[in-house]
Picture 1 (cartoon, rainbow, N blue to C red):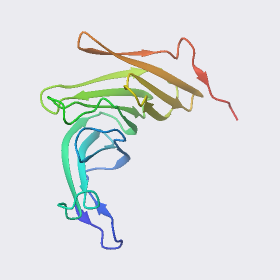
Picture 2 (cartoon, rainbow, N blue to C red):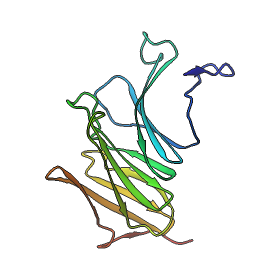
Picture 3 (cartoon, one colour):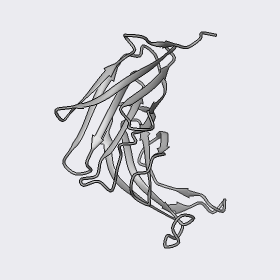
Picture 4 (tube, rainbow, N blue to C red):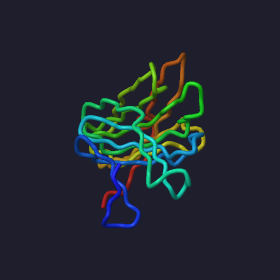
Length: 177
C-alpha cells in the first residue's frame, strides 16, 4: 500500500494486471475492516481494508489480500452477498460476478478448503450490473444490453448451490429507446 502524495487522503494497492471493476462490501461482515473485491482480466481479488479515519491504531490504510479467485475471463461487475461473514466459523465469502461472456458466476469460499463457483447464463448481450437482495441474499438481479432485468433465485440444497432463472418465466423488459 502506498500513500499518494498528490492528495491528502488517497491510497493505492499494487495490482498485477488490469483492474476493470472494484466493489466494497456494503453489508456488515462482522469485522471492523471493510471487505473489498476487484476484478481484472482473469481473476477476482478479495481483501480487507482498514482506514485511519475509522481506526486510530491504523496509520494511513492497511490492506490485506484474503484470496485470489481464478475467473478465466474479464470481470465486468461484482456484487457482494449479505451472507458474507468474516466472524463466522468458518468465515464465508460470497459474491457474484458478471463477465464479458454474458455469464454470471457465483463464488462461495470459507477462505480455506471450500472454494466453489457456479456459472449461469441467460443473457444474450453484455451484462451491465448485478445486485443481491439486501436482506438474506437469496436473490440476485442482473441487467443487460439485451433489454432485460433478470431476477435469479439462489438456494442451498444438500450443500450445493443452485441458480434458478426466473427470467424464462417472466422477464422484466426494459424500454428500448
